[in-house]
Length: 142
Image (cartoon, rainbow, N blue to C red; front, side, top):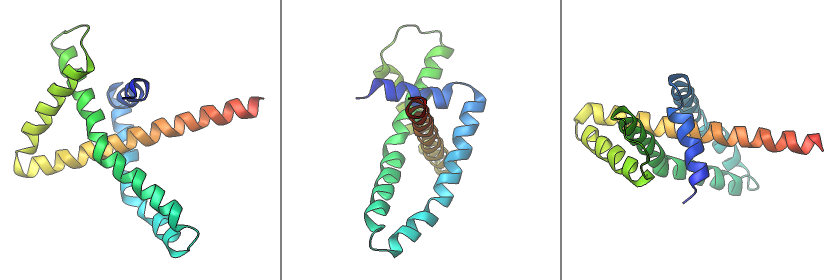
């Protein structure tokens, strides 16, 4: 639906191993510590709508972020087999297949699911932070 946004998130995941670990680390921090400001916002009547927006954004990224990770897994698999000029749908199918197979394994599937959620969340937060900095830089430049 948003190819530029999707490609930017995929670069934050599969750009290099440092990009992956940065996304994983930031995703873990956001997942474990995002409840603190949300709880503080839920205390006041004024903060409830903002908390609702934050919760909705968090749930959206957790649910649909797996698609970005699966796209990047499929991209890496296709690059491993030296497949050139493919449609994103093909990389998504390969990534979804890998994810489905790994999730069938009892304990490893749960760990994998946690890693997918945290990497997607971290990549999305990093992308939005980068876009926010670019916007602020352009505004302050004028």
